[in-house]
Amino acid sequence: MTQQDQITSPNPELTTDQIVAVLSQHGYRTTGPRQTVIAEVLRYHKPFTAEQVVADLRVREPSLGRATVYRTLEILASVDVLTRLLQPDGHSAYVVGVPGHRHHLICSQCGIAVAFTQCPMGELVTSLTRDTDYEIQGHMIEVFGVCPTCQAA
Image (cartoon, rainbow, N blue to C red; front, side):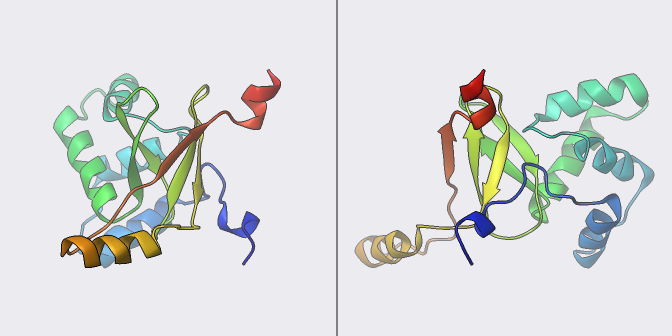
């Protein structure tokens, strides 16, 4: 696998059906409100906040409550369909992605996030475990830069 093979598109082509299948594998029912939230998050091509989802859905689905949106986003994150990111401004956001180990390269100007699977943390995790006796359960890497489109602008 080359380094280029390890970089995925900003919003991998996940479908509602694929997300519903992942939810089902984890024992979650797919209710109408959940399907509405799933359809909404698939519309985003950049990292988004829970409040953005609430605001955008308020226009189309005024009966859908804030708690339902937040709960659904938490469930989607727990089954690894959404990843929480730290944005350049320090606020957290979500990005849709195929379940699996991934990190993100984020444009600090336009906000686009590109997932990558190359992980340089193996040796560091081993060393930290040995040196600290911690049982390391995970890690996140977010790399910030300026994308080619913003560089050209």
